[in-house]
Image (cartoon, rainbow, N blue to C red; front, side):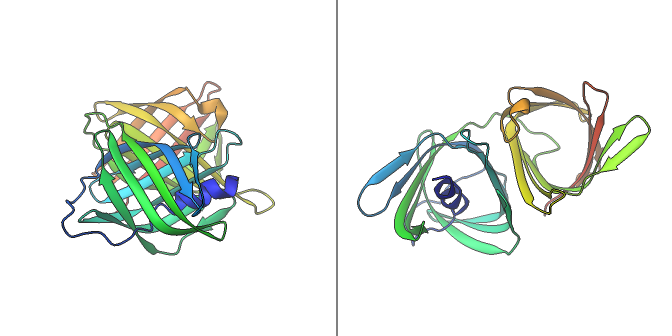
Length: 261
């Protein structure tokens, strides 16, 4: 069943043709997925336990998800455009459990705006080799907030400092900030060259342009859930920034980011 969750959510991008009379949806904001319903032509199966946050900026999207039952995770990032009743997403990077997808792909989402957020219907999608209809409901949770970090970012360097020692651990990480919410998703290989995926998401606030507080609501890493992190931020123009976290054990985590364009 775990494969069903990831396959369905990571393919929340294939839509059907829509009427030209439908209005253009306004997607910018942060959304929690509250339900996912799969119909295999015989019955509906509804899931409400998968935790997912999705952020649409003015031109980019990112989602991050975790299954609380086993902490398996996935995330995706890309750009999007809007047509009448349809959102067209151009995926550029997806991490899912032990796999990575970097091939560019374009998908259409059939969107219906609701009083609380939006509904997404995919009428013809294969799930576990069965033709199915997938319906997902999202609740808008945006906070009225504008910050210099709003947007989607890719990490360009990352290292840990412990005393006089500096340790680098190769990984690919993306991060998004918008409407008072943040998320990150990363992939890395262990010593056996097995790929791992990790995510986290929650709320954030900034004090000026040099201090930020992140509150982690859900994560692959249970130790981080419910924790607040104070982060030093150094902006380098509008398209680059550096963040530093000093942990309780004195270890510094230093990350450098470049804005995705």
